[in-house]
Amino acid sequence: MDYEAYSEMYMHSYVLNEDVKEYGLRYVFLLCNEIGLSYEFIVAIFSFLTVFYACKFIYKFSPNVMFSVLIFFTIGQFYQNTFNIIRQCLVIYILLSHLNLVLEHKYVRFVLLLLFCSIFIHQSALFLLILILCNLRINIWFKFLLLIVLIPISEVFILLIQNSPYSMYLGFERFISDVGMSTYLLFTFSLLFFLCDIFKRVVSKEDILLSNINFLLLIIYVLAIFFSNSAVKILIVRLSYYFSPILIVLIPRKLEMIRKKVHSNLTPYAYIFFIILFVVSLYLKGEINNLLPYQTILSLL
Image (tube, rainbow, N blue to C red; front, side, top):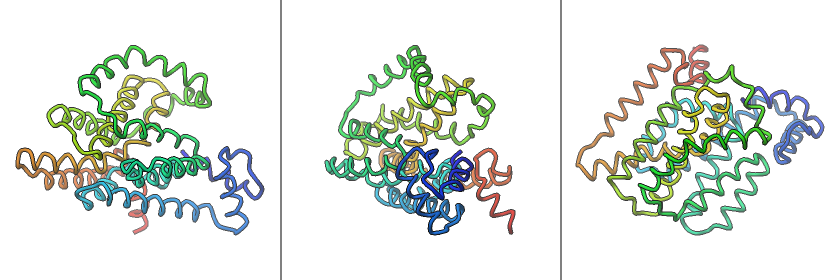
């Protein structure tokens, strides 16, 4: 992942390093080298900023801030990636924390922020999809139809990858098993929330946007399952990282919806579930839930 790859790039960035494709990151690495900052310090700064913007996102969109924070720190894919997929995670949470700009129809400001983020990671342009999804009311049965049609046409996805800079992922068969259990857990939540929309029509602008992003995430997960025995699964799962953080706020939002609809408070049970998941993952050395940073901390105690 990014940590190992960019460690070597940073070491060679005492001059402008053309191996760093994005101009923004290239000049940041050069400046930090000039100042004499260590690579570990740079990663710590990236991680701190990522957690800051993640908390900002949670504060704006979660009805239960503490529960969302618990989800963020107990699902390895969220917290661990702040140490590993450093650029991508920082950009994701910066843009997610500014979704209010889209909801308030301040599209120009959101696009300008998106263009700035694209200087550091080009794939952040994926968030342009959010501008399309923000006010789009998609019939739930039409969504079902899209999921069904997706399977026979999914081979087109392979053709697109074969003719793109990401074709290198097709040679990573040995890493297929590295996809963590947390991905399957998040897929389950995404599917459940999609099914919830059948019985509860979303009304508010926030709910429409989050529901549509969740549907996009579900499509990505379905593709990952369809290509579960292919190396392209790694690329698809990495693509899901751009949108999976919305589950951090969707989980408490859906629990709140259930509480109001059927007068049953499931949140305490959800707290227990995630705490047990966290403890069991630590007991198994973090391998199931990818909680490696915690293992590192505990090994020092």
